[in-house]
Length: 487
Image 1 (cartoon, helix red, strand yellow):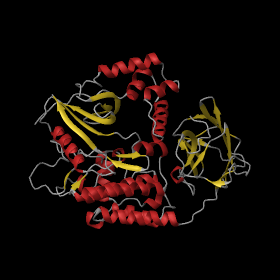
Image 2: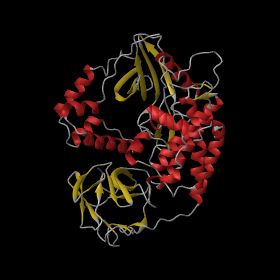
Image 3: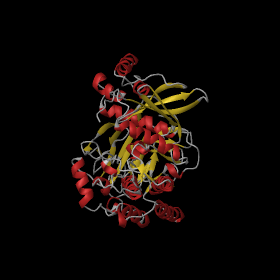
Image 4: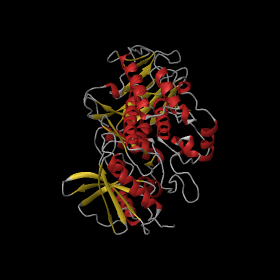
């Protein structure tokens, strides 16, 4: 059956690049700042951040917003009892808005889709998502609130989560500490236990469908969820009419790639293993020049052991990932409860071990660098930091609390790195108004920014800084002390 879906308006960032000449790098910086703010429970519109950083004038922003409206961003009828505030997301078949549910005066995420043919397959998927979410009243799922239809428009009101999704966090920090990764994975496994109780499978687990609400992980987007056994003979929703595979190839299980009919919870466990791999290594389990080549490798090549990328990864977590990602599902964990038990054992072992990392010391405090997930105080402000992405300190942060930070092997440096390839005073990071500059201090081995050797360069959030075998990323992090400059 054919159907027509109304075109979604483009994202503001796309228009800013196309119509206002905002560079991809400057846009990325603002998006990363937006994500970092989300971690503190604050939300700022991208347009406002583009103006604050000096990349757009208000007049130009108004022009871009008008173009969005002209292309249909609010081309939906009024939904009774809901006041739409602004769009917070858009996907392949829907727009998501922050809205106020008037009767109870609470903010909700309002998912809206409009079709000219209400009998289309995507409508069935949308209805399936609403029904599945209604069954899963659980703290690790985004809760369903309301569902309805106004003419050709369907809406689905859900619990509003102000925090970022996991993909946004990975874009910001590249990789997470093993402890934080296991905390997230264990909560996803808890959600999968609830799915098992309802004989459901998600079929599209991926970082964008994992929301972080403070310390709580919420699974969302049940558009591809279905019962484990299909006894009614309905078509497989993993396939389009043309036979193309739906879902995300990066986290798709081999049996889904083969379009097998008897998909069960083990497909979701495979996806969980892929996400855990991505969190602890900073790399996808498989890479391909195209979706077809990526799927071919999944079907016929074993995954590269995570310890190849992260030699310091614990044996327990490495085993957990590799067993989750076995190509033959009979060799994987068979239930989510088994995964949760193993994941908790790994986490308990890590948190009970006494580990020290003495190679990298902040000379101002004399203490080992502290990862944000190990702090207990409430977050308040944001600050720039260096995130180490290789070596013994991988996953740890050094906050940049001064207008000038000297990095080198000498103990008097603000950041002392005791590696033989560092000079006594290797490079400096200096704040200049609202920008940051890196300067080589005459080191013998030089310093690279995004793979290019530099003497002096402006750096942006997300840039990689490299001195031989030591790699760092310039990022924003949550400041738990509230004593440093906000960015």
